[in-house]
Image 1 (cartoon, rainbow, N blue to C red):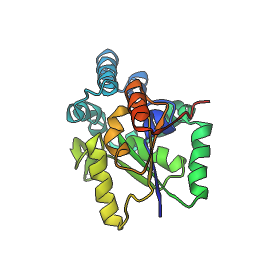
Image 2 (cartoon, rainbow, N blue to C red):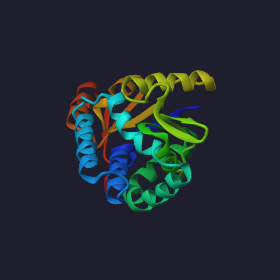
Image 3 (tube, rainbow, N blue to C red):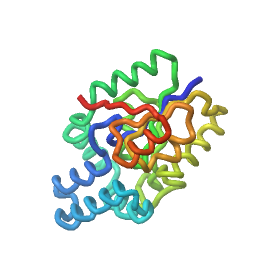
Image 4 (spheres, one colour):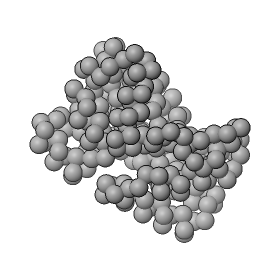
Length: 218
């Protein structure tokens, strides 16, 4: 069965859920506003520039999960979905997902954003398979550390290959949709790479390689 794989942030969503989670923590007074916002914005710019140290960033991003119990985190996440995520959902993205479903394709999101932030988003989009960066969980509480390989840049290929091996699948005929040049390794690995509202670096790479370019923005 053919895989249709989607990046999440700025691809299926008209925005970045990871950065938005940081903004939400600031707005709700959960973290120190000035310090956290500056760091969140700095890391996001490093991501856009292709200069992000993913482990350094995750040390920052996962700390709020470690500072609070699961019940409180889950309550905050419901509010975050309503305030931040649903306004970023796109009609054309839903139509694209339905297009692949109607062809019998297996849908997957692969994202560098952590599972705590993204699993409800995948559920709401009706996508069963999610590969996300995994926050370490011990005895029902997050530790602030990463479990395994972050699904970022080459790590997306590594994590996807692990999934393929575990499910006895391959990438024959697979599609991958992304907005970011950070996803070049996986875009190069599939038969049908698609640049979605691409950043300038990815747009140039897509034109150079003859990849499809499309927009999901209304």
